[in-house]
Length: 133
Image (cartoon, helix red, strand yellow):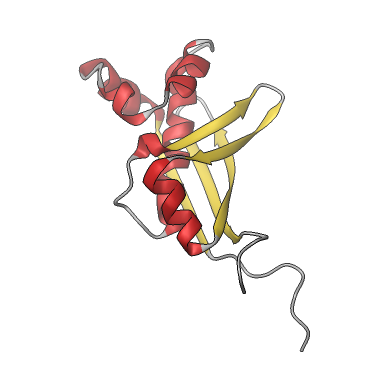
């Protein structure tokens, strides 16, 4: 049987978050945002109406990425969600998260959504084009 041009995913992760819960946590612990989010993520969210909604979607993406990678031992700040407005969201990995994904030969794809109350993200880990089969 010939190899499929689209190999099966290496991992999948999904996360659902109550936006109000994250907003309350950030109000109680203002420095928490700096531990969870990159400067770019914070700047993007703060430029939007109801920043907590955008941060919650990014937090959900980080949690889903950990699940897709199969590791909960990476710093959330090393997983950065970029894009927004007219640009599709993407995940940029830094430090140990980038090394971890590289060792496994995977790249991450992300989808985000939110309503007034909930934020969700799904992340698919796929074999990198340069990875060995």
